[in-house]
Length: 453
Image (cartoon, rainbow, N blue to C red):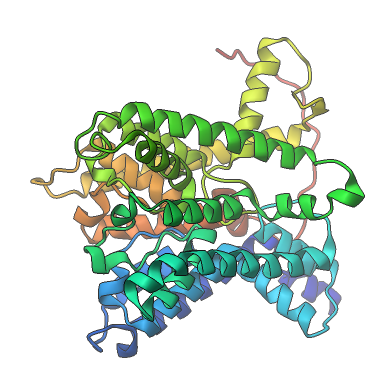
């Protein structure tokens, strides 16, 4: 009997993949109901499937404008899907088990840690309670600030707008309720509103730093120092935010369709917001389709990098980029070991960095090729726009340069798959398919030589 139980165990990666699939299926069924649409009619199941996947994978790509098509019930369903997808379904289940006083074994906590994309997570039950608690605190604080703008402007509905937008910003969801200002206009109408842009920027940054960084700061008194992971995330996030702001200030400053006519302060604010949002937030304040192709290429790079591990954001993660950089630097400096902030990076981390990077580029390439060749012959979307939307889907950024709206059924199917792969992670997806419950044994093989470069 124990042998049978052991054979039936799911590894953490498989639990993660199946869990998200179940959430997407439940969301699809709820969105199909007539009560979910403002017209009180059934929404086509494929469109509901696309929306549920986008919400559960905290992407923000849409077929319908969220405000114009979905009723209050439908908007609540989308918000719950984003909340569960952002925090991680295993994290939420773990939290409620703790709240009910149930004992959690090592395997349960390990599964939850994998859901946070952190394989060597420490902190036990306490961290999961902190994640839920502080997530709600940040979201409520953000909603309170946004209400000072939305309630005077939109009345009682502004209360729900504030809650919805705060939750979406913190979870890097990308959905919005600004359709009343223009269909699929996102935050373009808020270009000159510093309260909205700064508040949403801070929420995106907090969600994108990751729960592991929060835990380090919350326990700084006992630990007395920041961990290597926290320092890496803060340094890389700061560099990317500053570099992105400068990039958009230069590349879009003379573009009449975006920032040319803005005063300097407004240009700086919008460049900063775009730098924040492109790495997974998913809000469009300038009009991505109106940007120059040079700016779109820069945005593709920022989206592909994404946020931090264990966060509500996507992408290959800032720590992956840092490990790649220091690996190259260490090799150029003829060092035997890869060092970061006077710490040696173990080989398994370097291997994982390589695997994540290669698989991510492969996933984006497949989606890009399929998207490009599925475009109608008379479409205006070119290769850059197709690559933009493919990377956006994989990194769960949710921004679009127009290709997603023009593609057909096959293209949208590829976008759904890419969003799912981007959220659960290509490594987790492959491990869920090929790994069995037994740990693989290391087999000793002879050394070999191969020429490189």
